[in-house]
Length: 401
Ligand SMILES: Cc1cc2nc3c(=O)[nH]c(=O)nc-3n(C[C@H](O)[C@H](O)[C@H](O)COP(=O)(O)OP(=O)(O)OC[C@H]3O[C@@H](n4cnc5c(N)ncnc54)[C@H](O)[C@@H]3O)c2cc1C
Image (cartoon, rainbow, N blue to C red):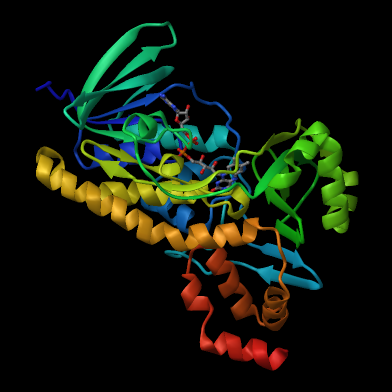
């Protein structure tokens, strides 16, 4: 049997990996965090962190560092759909009602610094290339440095936080538990001189999101059906402009007076799946475990929640294989239970349909601030979908109809 140098090796140091490593180190474990990039480094993502994610940042002691940047506080959501305009804000989580949308080259280094401050050994520019196994148990990793040197490290547990194309998931042959075809594709860029709330514009086949971020910049993001990806990507800038013009004419006019500060970024890789999230000596967190369409802006928060869930389940079990394996099984089961509803509701939004029944619901709640805020709270995850769609609500919709 190999000698375990580390308690845990975490592969990937962004929204899932850095918090998981930090929390494990705070629990007293010896943790190595391997990241193939060098920070600060941007990544393809927009930035909205819903209230449960903000609450976790505060609980972890990292929110002050985020607030110390020039990230803009977001206290209001404005949602335009059909003839309805809903304006409000999610209910608070642990007292946090303000959301933030930091650029990833701002957020990810704060998370990685948090891990290092907790005692994690972070090695950047290190790409994991294979896993070590003893029988069917993962016991370590092999990795290559940017200079081309090969190294091997051993641990009791290897955590794959290496994104939706996870090498760790592939090497352990993690089963795909649920998979749905991609529904959307998206393009986005940043504007100077475009003051905005968190704004959403929804019409059949189109969706536009607006998010204030760092550097006084505002992100504008346009979604199209996946079936249109080939035609959209041929001239993405024109398709983007036309989407905004036809979906959000008032925003389009405001953008005419502003300045596009960066090129357009985009992707059609809006994969939807849940994977088996743990096995002997390994676990997956973040996009590696569970990926869904970005339209609901939940991936960052969900990565935080999964990191916390994994470390809560592991507790003090790392020294005992049987207890550890039982804890990992509980983590995998709880992850399915906890994220399946939101996975399904994200797919409903990503279908880019506006059924009449949904419009009727929005019309019924539009004049009611409490209900509007509760609706936004279902989008943020502050309350469960079941807590919103109750008999009282259906009665109100029936009366309004
Ligand atoms: C267009 C778009 C918009 C989005 N908008 C939002 C939003 O507004 N809000 C939100 O919450 N979420 C959003 N998301 C989702 C969010 O970006 C992801 O869910 C989140 O980044 C997941 O974090 P992660 O740490 O699991 O994975 P990643 O961010 O993918 O990080 C994985 C890390 O692992 C490293 N890595 C990979 N392989 C190896 C290896 N072999 N060795 C070492 N390191 C490795 C990578 O370099 C990377 O740094 C969006 C996504 C997209 C694509």
